Amino acid sequence: MSTVTIMPSGKTVDAQEGMSLLEIILAAGESIMHKCGGNAECGSCHLFVQSGRKSLSKIQAAENARLDTIVGIGSKSRLACQTKITGTEDITIELLGFASGL
Ligand code: FES
Image (cartoon, rainbow, N blue to C red):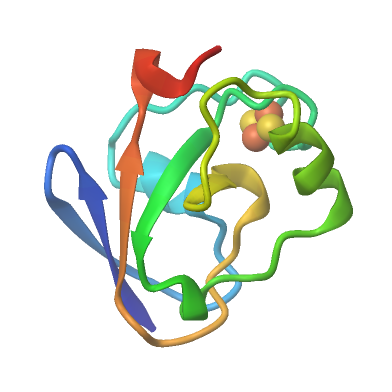
């Protein structure tokens, strides 16, 4: 289990391995767009991982291809629906809202 801190609210959530960031964010009562329902097709769940990347699944081809279509991505960019907890290190993520470039 790891603790996920969701910025900018600062809310913290305990997260089990195998959960996606999208599931964690929604379970925490935070809002994040996820227009395609978590299928790596829309890019609306784009966020930044500020710390704890070692506890997250690696970027796969579908996520990489979708990220390439988004304006404003950076080295910390991930799609919440494609990123799963794989370790126990604490994680801090930043929700982007209208700053995501979509
Ligand atoms: S919800 Fe559409 S890409 Fe994540």
